[in-house]
Length: 134
Image (cartoon, rainbow, N blue to C red):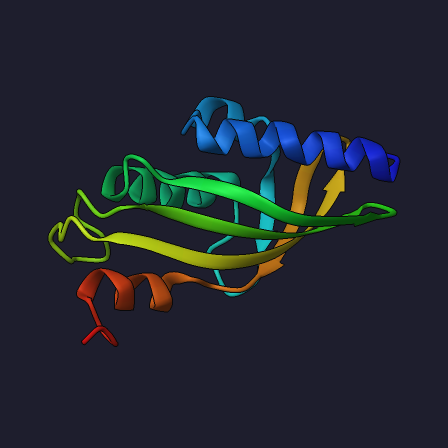
């Protein structure tokens, strides 16, 4: 894919994510996708997203920046939502969370085959616990 195609591809992927459309998201994932420091495979990725969407039913990502080169795309996003369901064993707090996320994907034939990036899980847990707020 050309860099401009990767930008469009990511816009479509992000749209599916923001609609919480797991079936459509799956179309962007290679069945054996490798994720750094996380369980591999599309099923594990989709399960993680499903958990997030249950805990934060209004979760959305906003794209800040995208850089594409060859078969790789790097993205800076802001993710946010309201904690209305169980997340990581934590009962709903009704707190709003807003976290920065960075990811790099290797894309082959329109599917993510490798993914790495920052984990916002700790920051997200801190925000819904109310840590650091006085």
